[in-house]
Length: 77
Image (cartoon, rainbow, N blue to C red; front, side):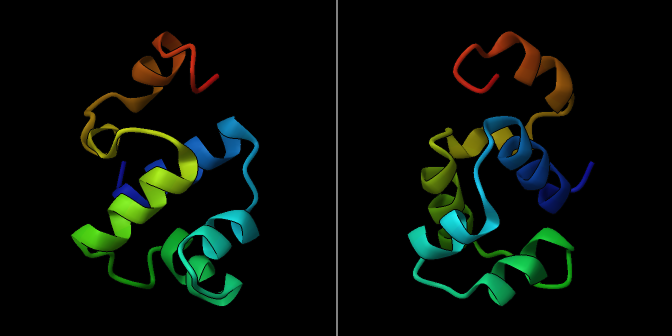
């Protein structure tokens, strides 16, 4: 699973809107759409901002088996 797919999975599981993430990152909804569809590159700073908006540790985006991690993390479900 690619990082943009992991971001979307976590966002959906947490019930966070795309607009919320864009606002937290001081960006537009169109910007987040590019991220979520994998059309825009994500640098380290942006990934950290998205993690903060989702209230997760940035390392979660690098988990090999994210579904198992999400199911074991009570804070995300």
